[in-house]
Amino acid sequence: MQNLSAGGKIKLIAHHFEKIMRLLGLDTDDDSLKDTPGRVAKMYVKEIFSGLDPANEPQITLFEKNYNYNEIILEKNIPVYSYCEHHFVPIIGKAHVAYIANHKIAGLSKLNRIVNYFSRRPQVQERLTAEIADFLKAKLHTEDVAVVIEAEHLCIASRGIRDAGSTTITGSYHGRLGTEKKSELIQLLKL
Image (tube, rainbow, N blue to C red; front, side, top):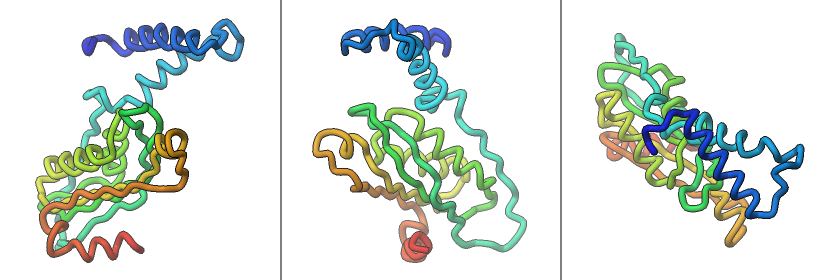
C-alpha cells in the first residue's frame, strides 16, 4: 500500500470513508455529504498527513555564519497542528525551537517548515518533539539544539475526561542547551 500514488491513496481512502459514513447512518447521497469522502481523503493525503510523504521533507537553506554570534537562536510560537495517533483527533499548540549555530545558520522560516512537516502525521507529542530535535541536529551539524512543545490534545478535551484547557509540555534539550545554556533558554521562553 505504501507504493500507491497520492491519487490512488485518495481514491481508496474516499471509498473506505464513505463506508464509515454509511455505517454511522449518514446519507451519503445528501447534497451536503455526497462529496465528503473525497474531501476527507484529499485532506488526509495532501494536508494533515502530508508529513508521511518523504518527498515533502523541507529543504534546509543554510548560510555561512560570517560573524561572531555564538548565542542562542530561538524561534518561538511556531504553530503545531498534528493528530493524535491513538484517536486521530487534533493536537494543537506551539513549538519553540532553539539552537546555537556551529558554522552555519538556517533560514528562520525553515524552522517553521520542519515543525510543520513532522506535525503532519499521526503523532504522540513526545516523539514529535524528539523527531524535530534529531532532524535539526543532523541538518545543522550541531548538538546544541532544543525543542519545547506545549499543546492541547483534543483526545483529552473532546472525549474521555473532556478536560478542555489542560496542556502537555514536552522538551528535548541537547548539547549546551541541555546543560550550561538551559537556564538562559528557559528565561528566553518566558519572555
